[in-house]
Length: 137
Length: 137
DNA sequence: AGTAATTACTACTTAAAGGTAGTATTAATT
DNA sequence: AATTAATACTACCTTTAAGTAGTAATTACT
Ligand code: SF4
Ligand code: SF4
Image (cartoon, rainbow over all chains, first blue to last red; front, side, top):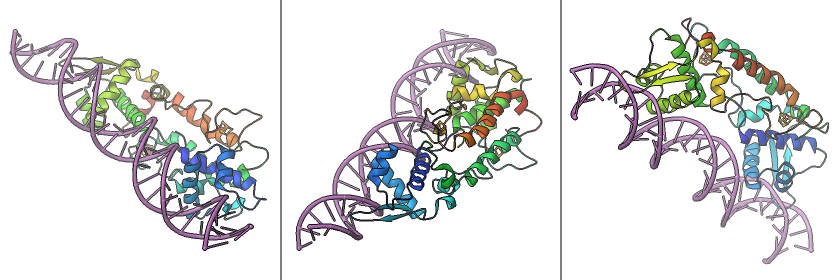
């Protein structure tokens, strides 16, 4: 009942980048050091973020990474989506799968509330919301 | 962001057993067939449920399993606890870990609401609540 | 042109969850 | 006592997530 390591790292990375928006480029070494994420694992994640168009990379000497959009336009849900970690409408609690109003397990209705709240939280929180203000990353 | 396979199976097994309370014993083959869970994996789970005192087992010919307590006294949370899949108070969204009121990430407060709702859901739902009524298991 | 610093790619290793196989133990029936 | 049907135990195999290593490609600076 928690996000994958990869998703957690990705959120923290992007929030950190949003926070440092002033300085144009941030490189992998700086990110890995600041966020205490294994360097090689981080670069792997960064490449996926670049492919997903959330981040721009500049290769070669003096290269680095930069957010591709303004922080307020990148939602946490967009990040989770990349790693198949977002909450879908059909997210199932007991793993039976496709059920409907007539045929459902007894936890389905109870599960709806927190599920929708999680969805909303992820869809409405942008990097601008979760970065800055001296908050922990 | 979902329960482990093992936890999902365990909940469904116990809910099914609560539903069939009338017939004294249910054996592993019946459970595996009814719930479409791999037999050998199911017996592994059953043994853990027995050790955790939620289920009584009777070995030998004509043996099987039986709930150890009445259905209303077994909460979903008790099941999740066995497999370290319950929602703890300290459950962390971003994986940084031990934070507090003064030093926290910006998602912490938003995360509190769904987290508490999940906790409540698991702690308050008993097998009696989720079994029966022709609901899917 | 050469070097250094950077991201990207390919491939591997490790750890954990999920699942399977075989055997031992237990107990009722004959 | 032997057989049969059940759970319990031990050990293994498979799949996926997490993490690591090495090399190629790219670019700025000298
Ligand atoms: S009814 Fe239960 S099993 Fe079916 S989709 Fe909803 S949560 Fe999952
Ligand atoms: S503040 Fe954020 S990182 Fe810290 S425990 Fe809460 S959710 Fe986790």
